[in-house]
Image (cartoon, rainbow, N blue to C red; front, side, top):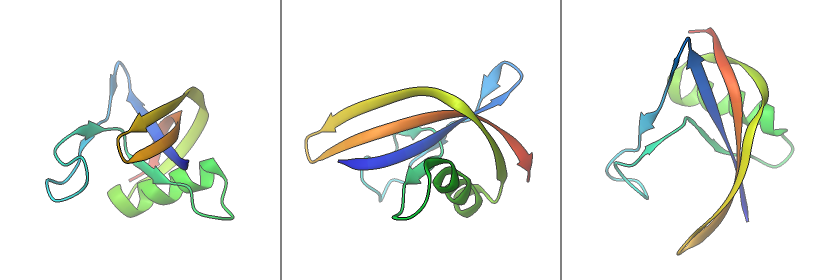
Amino acid sequence: MVEVVAALIWDKDKFMICQRPANKARGMLWEFVGGKVEPGETKQQALIRECREELAITLSVGDVFMDVIHEYPDLSVHLTLFNARVAEG
């Protein structure tokens, strides 16, 4: 099972989603920003790293919004979605 984290980035009553590139797996679908947890990092560290790499922003990570296990035809994913806000960027 792949460990994945994502950020529910709030701005008042709105939140941010991103569209996957067409040439990637599950291309053109909408998702929360995030990615895979690398060996040796916490989920929060992974989320901060992914947001810095993908969007050039620094997050303030809050509490867990929800945990979901999803079975794709080719992949099992454990997603942890965190409340977050942009600290810099």
